[in-house]
Length: 310
Image (cartoon, rainbow, N blue to C red):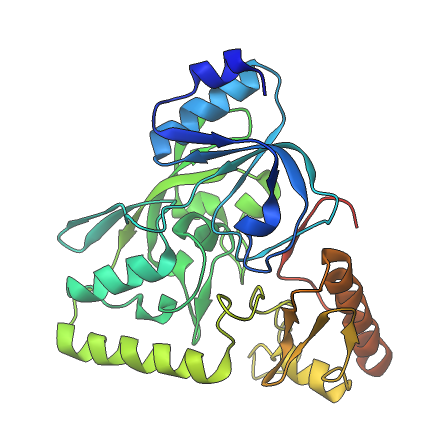
């Protein structure tokens, strides 16, 4: 990026060049990008995007990078990082919560419980930002964040900003219209229920303990959570079936490619060892898709997002 563009950036941004994206994804994988601009507030993100659009710079927006697989060759564009790992931006007003899209989802769950608004405790321990969670309609235990969204302020890819209702986001299982449009959540208003702090604190602790017993800690075992979406209902029971079950039945638990292998406790989670490449992880997902296709006759759908060439 030229010095003229950098000089026009908002003061609450930081710019890094010659950056490898492996430092900004939970897989710890990914090659270089043209530049990385850390946007600390919704206003900074909106103003930075508008400047880049005006200057004809291609860009993408990432959060904590907890659901991304970035190619080894990297990305030929500017990356705007919208993730606040040390300062949650959350405001409480009765049973309403306004939260910035760059706030970590687990921070939102923790603060909500502390304020006696605990019906999103199921988000406890899920990595990533609130914005990413809304775009992917994150959830657990049969609940999803789309159920409590009232409105969202969005930034379109052309830099335009508008506010929409939850209905306009067309929430579905692990998806929303944002996955197709690429619009970014600047902030959102949630309508939640009041609860007993002690009861919900205990529930949050139970959920965190359960996650710890079944899932790897991405800080020490690089991963991106579940690789594939669960399977849509195929019976009158109308319950989704875990992709991990099909993967295990297809015999993938011992699959590995290079430094990429399956987590010993979960057939739908890939661990990237230090000697792994993004290509290793991608090829392993292809093997997993092939094994399920051969045994059950359908193709799994990736939950992780691929960025770059594979």
